[in-house]
Length: 251
Image 1 (tube, rainbow, N blue to C red):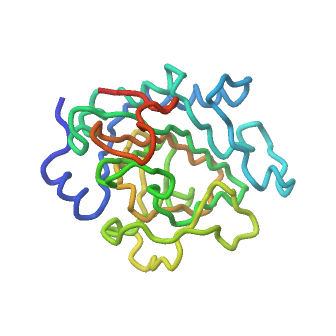
Image 2 (image 1 turned 90 degrees about the horizontal axis):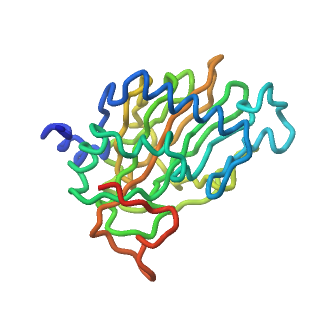
């Protein structure tokens, strides 16, 4: 199975991200989307967790359905239907193009942005959440399950921002903010690019790339399945990161 092309790899290195269109077909997307909806409606086994939207938690919005109250589903490593995302052949070939032949998954999420809530995610760098180094040994992925447009709150990125290193982060000065979401300080977003994706399109991005998302102003959901991966030769301070209960060897 072919991975990223030479030009796609160059774009990834130069810009900090690359998009592969239609990497997952309609049946795969429907399976992930359906499974997410099923899990939100039933008790979850560890380590899976559901994060509720902060506006719902604080009573500012009354959810119309259980799905309207969910911000994301975390840690689906033990769910075969969702974790098939990380093992899909064409997707894995793209990861290997960047990380090499031995790849481990680090974290997994399904992001859900309902209509009618704030839903913003401030500009940030994902390396803020990881102790693994070097940064080049980590890749983030984000695959649309519903249309991700500017109206529905698609991701925005600052091209080539991965070259500036890790910047300071703090909580954004917003009325409603999820305390798990940090914001990069002093970000110049004048060069931001909106990454609009159709269901099945996949963004591969560097963990130092500045990215975030705005409100969902549409009438539908913006939903995506996402994961982070590391190369086998990555290092971390303290104990071996491969012993983490959530880490899985993919190849």
